[in-house]
Length: 315
Image 1: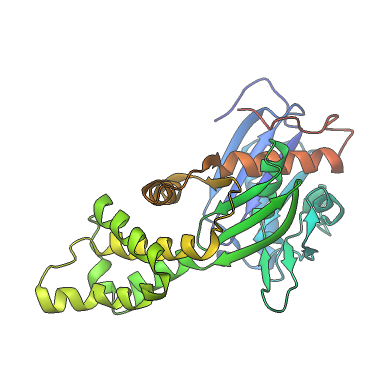
Image 2: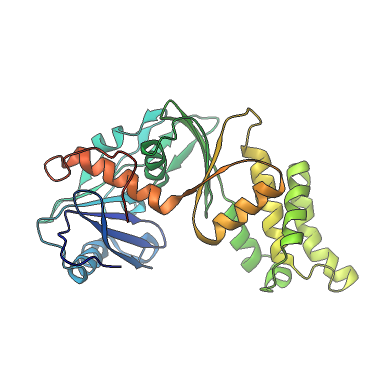
């Protein structure tokens, strides 16, 4: 989308492993234009970031003096330039202090740090999700549990607007590996989907997550022994993994749960939580990351963005 007659004052970017999302905004936070690309860290060499970004900025006619703020895997050791981790627990405004400036560029381009949990019993890291969490805090989510599903799902605990701890589950990656590389590929290749089978599997795994691993092999053994006994294997595989994830990560402590996601993965997790009778607040993760980025930009460039965020960016 493009809004004509407006000047781009800031460009925000979420640059992950598999994709790049760019947003051009004015100083009030109004979205002027957005672009998307499959050129993530997994497909770029270190020398490929600058021309990839410049190509998008040129296509959006972004002025040379407009700064760019980036979050995500572009700041990893294997990315464009490393932005060292902050230490959890932490407040999110500290992201501005940890931002690095890309060297050798005429334009002011900065990358936000990720956050590390240096607990020998529960070591963990995140890059990109911290900016989504900051966006939620900007919009008033000061306490509760936040589920950020994806290739590597994050479960974060927010207290008083600070990140106090988090846990990563490799649910999305394991689903892809099992479905494409394991013996289960013969069972889950079908594109048929059954909500009933999905919800049933979620319930089974949530009730007894210790049996989920054994239940996975049943997706292979069932068809071998009883013919087409599992016609919706992908539904059951997804349900077993998501059900076990929820059981492992969600504490029954009465704290509010916020589901920050978009697209199909949001629908799956929402369906699973609803089927389990667990209440939650749905949050648009893309809007949240944009809100978080814009608020940090207002700290880094107060002469361009004169006021801190009060409720988020606008479309």
